[in-house]
Image (tube, rainbow, N blue to C red; front, side, top):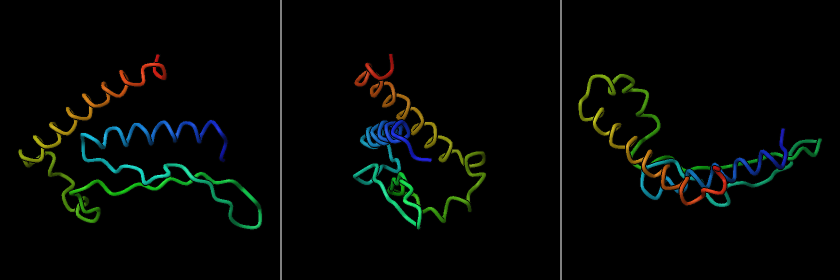
Length: 102
């Protein structure tokens, strides 16, 4: 169920994901990152967020290669490189937004 705390958390999450997207291929959020909708007979507030697919990955292709991360050295190296970039970018994010994480 929607509440203001949930909206604040999603806003922070979206900011973080979009920050990562500056350095790493991620499914960044479409602005506005958070919107409201009321639907049905009962006027319930709903939180809506929309993101793009990560560039370079067709969603329907992912399931065809479930074990490529085990058997294909190029895939293993690519995943390792991506995770290293994500870690470094995450560290930069926490330094830039230190007030939120202390």
